[in-house]
Image (cartoon, rainbow, N blue to C red; front, top):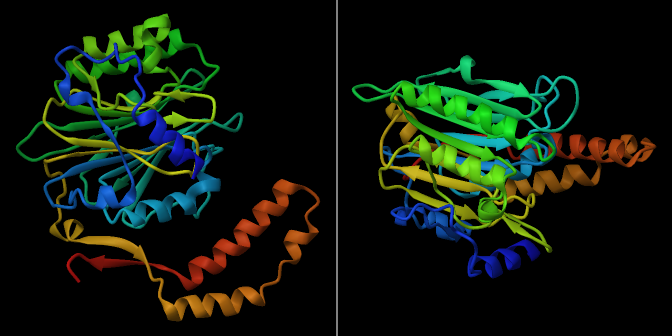
Amino acid sequence: MFLFLFAFMFANLTTDNSFVADDASYNTCSYFDRNDFCNLNVSTPDNFSIFDMNARSLCRHFYDIHDFVLSLNHSFSIYGFSETWFKEAPPQYVQMDNYQLIHSSRSDKTGGGAAMFVRNSLNFHVREDLMSSCEDFECVFIEIERVHAVNLIVGNVYRPPGASPDNFNRSFDSCLNTVTNENKLCYIMGDSNLNLLNCSNHRPTDDFVNTFYAYGFRPLFDKPTRITPHSATLIDNILTNNDQDMSAGILYSDITDHLPLFQVTPFCLDNSASARNTYVTRDINATTIRSFTADIVNLDWGEVYAADQADSAYNAFLSTFNSLYNLHFPFSVKSRGH
């Protein structure tokens, strides 16, 4: 609730938008609650859509995030997450039906990471030549093949707060140079930890802005995306070299201190008609709720009480609770209009 209040305050705050190009009137964006998003009516077959969020541990917040995106009643083409905090392979429960997980994770320490859930109906391949998991530049990239149209490259990029911004900018420049030389459409989401609202006072941020504009990319967001009681910064964004009109917005959520972003562009990528007419939801009704309530009363919490560390107790509780929750409220595929 507090995050929503801060977002409301900063939504009308005058900020330094000098990073926005003079002719880029389409860069302005707004904040959306769930009802606002659902009222956009973007769930049509001819839309390419992205959901992007800094998860601050996708393992810990996965079920909250999954239920949040289900409540939007829209199956995004791609879900992108930074700060996944995977260590090599992600846990088995971090999965989405009808989506393939592509990720770049640290093997030597926790934290960081970038990942994308890509809808199975998309014909794509991983761009290994653009992938990176170095300490200054973590990213994943895919290329989506389109029939009778130029291919689409989509990436998710993350720069840790303590990483060299100059090294990050050099790696980012290299990625944009490759994409531009291939003359393909591109969307790059993620968290650069470079506050675009402060670019006039911070040389590395100004360099970052100049770099993406030099390659013909534009940011879709011009308002704070990370809001705390003490600051409001624009460090999350989606950049694109597509000058087509599109919808973009920042979603209210208090799952982490980073607000989720979305964009919807009116062109179709799916190869199957069935994927366009279905969505995934949980089977929650009076019967399943009664069954869940009856079982949770008799649940054995011995493993939780036996833990000698707070983290161990939390993980044991989460694992036990989620197992029962998924048993009684399974995911199912529904047809739109039914």
